[in-house]
Amino acid sequence: MSDFRELSDTVLASPQISIEDIAAAKAAGVRLIVNNRPDGEEPTAPQSDAIKAAASEAGLDYISIPIGHSGFSEVQVDEMVRALDTADGAVLAYCRSGTRSTLLWALAQAKSGVAPDDIARAAMTAGYDVSPVRPMLDMFAAR
Image (cartoon, rainbow, N blue to C red; front, side, top):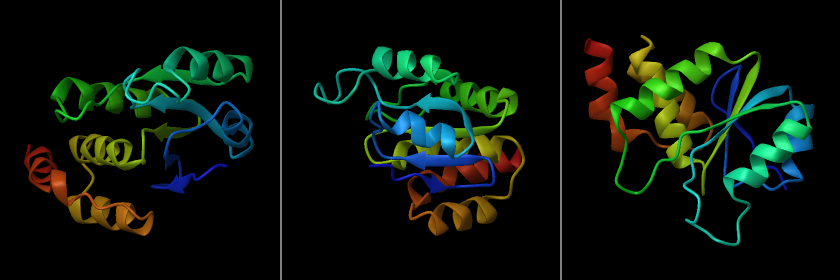
């Protein structure tokens, strides 16, 4: 069952998706799926290769930017900036709960010049709290 949450007009966040959610994502206008969950984190969940294959079969692009529990690196933020900048349509990012995907999206937005308060409001509207990365949002925004 899909739990896609709108972060912006072109970005959705979601808890772990199933193979069946790929069709719902496509129907929602998604063109790129971003997997922020490391393989093996939950062995019973569909792993990266299965989601990638299903996305490809549905004609969707796919990228994996795994975020472990150790946190975020600037390399991962840059990968997300590139993914969002080059996506040919809407993006669905997912992880276990959608939180890491939302936090990575928030960091990418801040690095791209979006005001941290605007990012925080959008995330909160979708049911996510970006306060754990707020100092990083402010740092990227100040650059």
